[in-house]
Figure (cartoon, rainbow, N blue to C red):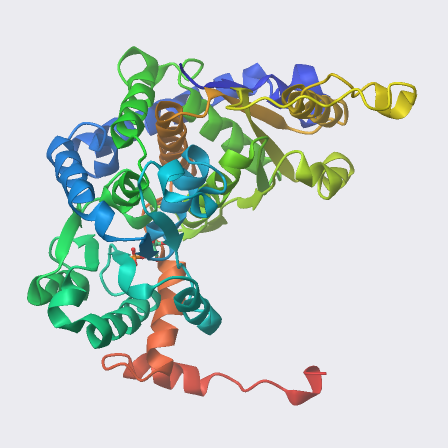
Length: 469
Ligand code: PA5
């Protein structure tokens, strides 16, 4: 089972003036070849270590599986303490592959696996309410941080650690904390080793938002009974499509083509990409993608240091829900968007609408129809409406949402993002804009080493009260 991409509705012949012509793709052949080469060169030079994750984690997977077996009956819930790339992937995979009401199911219907919570924010209400919801001593806390120093995650960790030590003692607390972090940089690895916590390693050359297929995502998924080998197999299947013969022919390389069409869209003012899955299971894939695409491509400088201020705003939508809120804008608003539908051929369940009001024509037509047909028909109808309105749109389809096809989709988006970075000639793997906010926070708290930043903040003009009304 392989996912597919349909980009008919990106083309001029389907949507008219706003579309892309085959000739304009051809004109970019040189740039495409340059980007292809950069992808190969960077991979060879170990600068895209996330591309090797489908192949080099046999031992990690075994260790994860052993650890899950050892721990799963000891706990009621597995709790992720992480943010950004250390939280969005675990949420997306859980939502995609497990029962949508997983935590509400009785344990036997979860096949004996614990519940999953991802506490990805520092809203003060969150932890307090969380501790009211579970027995905090019956949870295993997975502190995930690539840098090992993210304030939000580390603050959650310190609160949890204190609580556990008060209730269980130091030795008891030790069995309730597992860390996922870099092997050498940051505080978390030092703490994990010093305190004697179990830990898993994120390969140092894999950045946060590209880390879902490391223990960042694999450990939470395995604790919820998901097929982590399948995820990696799926990623390998997508990788196979993007290398060898398929590498250079953009018409056979779907993630490269996705990136190219988005790049060409950006060049004609399509500054927004809307990812709109027609499956609740894929709802949080849009959140995960939003970070990947937004943080990777939104850059001030190109590789030569010129100011370019590029990027494309990722918008999350859900079909059919957002047909009743956003689609009016997509069909008639500014020509500034690409809509990416994400559909599935086969849903995991089927439900049929009863023929209750056969005599009422405006309801009767629904009788005997399945929700499966309804959602798919609405997706096709929205695609038709946007195409008729001359709006760029394309469709990714998973034959079925399984560990393999999800692995394909995650890897597809990662490759597409990296390739878009090459076309834009920017560094898709850094995030200087995020660092600035982080540094300002440290300075405001008076963290040693941030004195200069503190002075800079203090020198900034104060707000004028007449504009606060
Ligand atoms: O992609 C990134 O590097 C970031 O968005 C990180 O995922 C996020 O800031 C969390 O960082 P860390 O995992 O280091 O705590």
